[in-house]
Length: 146
Ligand SMILES: [Zn+2]
Image 1 (cartoon, rainbow, N blue to C red):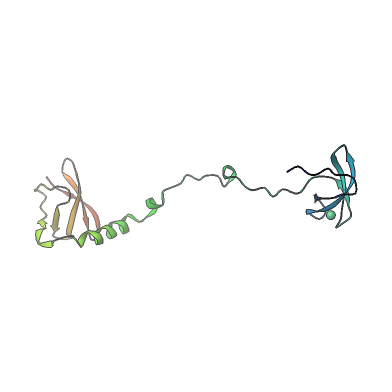
Image 2 (tube, helix red, strand yellow):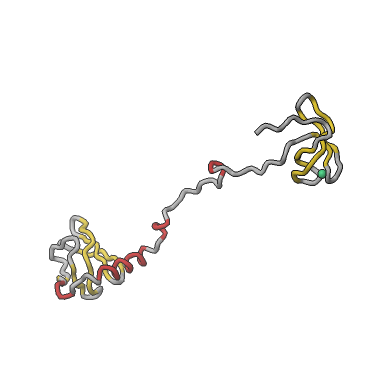
């Protein structure tokens, strides 16, 4: 929107340095169609016209500098995550089908095993040549297998 034609004596909004806000000012002097001097209607100070004080909206690019963002999930306590997973898993487990853990035995992912000290566990993954990750109630353990 263009400002309507102004002339000395008109009242316009301008930023006043003394009042530190955008207030009504009376135009004191103009050069052509440009307002050059105004008188603040509040403090009656005469100063160069500045135009209304712009409240600068911060654009997204000016927003806080991006910190290297760590995915929230990565901060989750891995132990806690394992316990939650275990809680969800154990509902589907059938302890009767658990294979007694034996390091000389072959296991596959998702096998249900029973370990003498850790109790029931589910094989998460096989890590060649001879290890496997097993989720127990107490968390994930690395066990030997064939
Ligand atoms: Zn003022």
